[in-house]
Image (cartoon, rainbow, N blue to C red; front, side, top):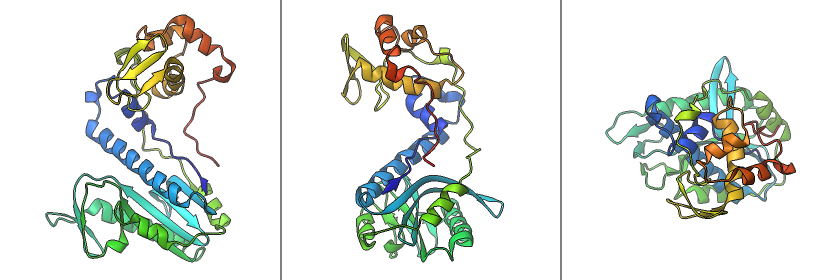
Length: 296
């Protein structure tokens, strides 16, 4: 499988990494939480799809933004196997739904317009471009929250954590994928202009050492060993420093990074001598060039 990796938006990245350090009351926290859950769900689906199709001759594209017929659509992921296109819209909802074979409804009977309209728009616009370029286009909502229930007699029309394996198994192993269609999908992508960067004031963020995995506070056990107060994972000082080398330019793109600033960032838990030693190492001499660009 050729896989183009998914990266979180800058908003999601900031929220996930700083929610234990910074008071987001001035922002729409509910919206940020929703976006973060959406990203987590998308990564879950990516892992499941990659685990199943990773050894096949196919391509998996993620986080796609298109403008077709002057209309913008966003698609979570597309899997191209041989001459077939599988479009997955990943949803991490924490509420139940019903599905009558055509439309989705809340359990109180109210139509779930947001999802219905989204799926209809994707179907119409993607068929406009690709209907005669591939043998089939399959669009599947993928509900990845195992605690959610979709009440329906038409379970073959959507994926859940209970039935996704059966659907994946129904797709025969491939020996090729339509490279022309894949190239067109990649070249059609447009920047997402709706994800405005969050401007977080550096001086208002709590300083200290935080877990690179769950972003909770770390306790210093020895000079070079730290343990998370939430997930109990342990990290070396090098791992924590290198994680911060990647995080800081995204979190604070306008802040000049120096060893003095790094010392402040870790709340004095890392010695300036230790920080300078890592800073001077060749492999991290230019650590602040990370971008969200995907493979082309």
